[in-house]
Amino acid sequence: MGSLRLYAIAIDEVREIFGAPESTATALRAIAAHRFPAAPATAHGLLAKLGPVFRTAPDAPVLRPGVPSGSDVDTLLAGRYVPPHRLSACWTLFEAFVEAMAWGATSQSVDEAELNDFDFDLSRAAVPSRYGLRQLLRADLGISMLPPPGLAAGFAHADHVTAMAEAWRAGLPLLEVGNQPIASSLLAWFDQYPGWAAQASSGGRPAPDLVTFLSI
Image (tube, rainbow, N blue to C red):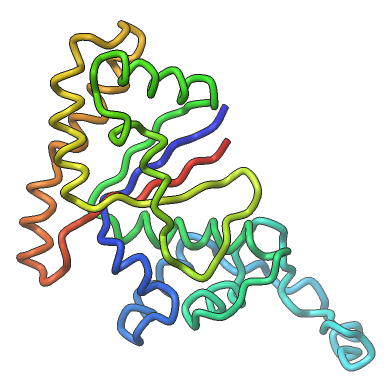
């Protein structure tokens, strides 16, 4: 089973994670330290003193596949190239940053067949195809890091979210009974955008767009 995750956050704030200014970087480092505590050193005593013999120091933190490390934090915040073997970990870290900065988040468990069925049902209910769930992945995030296999990401501007909600609301009664709960749940989430925009304005932050991650 896959997962569709939606975050209410301005795309400019997402892009600023890469090469983040010092104030933002400090806050994101604190988030990373809380979410992904560093692995303890594994070498002690005499073995630790033999560091120069080894390509990697024996007491260096273990870099676990898919698990963000301190060096991954440095890489993202400096906007440096992410090597293929660290892509999974860096995307996990990146999404954790997006989640922490977002005004709101929601998710749906979905596989390819269910996603296709839902979008087909929207079309059958006269909802324009540009407002389908898969369309939320069409616009590239505009970041320097490619997604690993099995992951897709995209964004939509705030005005698209407003229009999408209006189209869904009109088509909701025509959806199949099995798809109505998902549509209703997402509509309730979309309806919070005006409040989040007001909070963002009061806090000196840009109004949220919609950033989407899909794992299949």
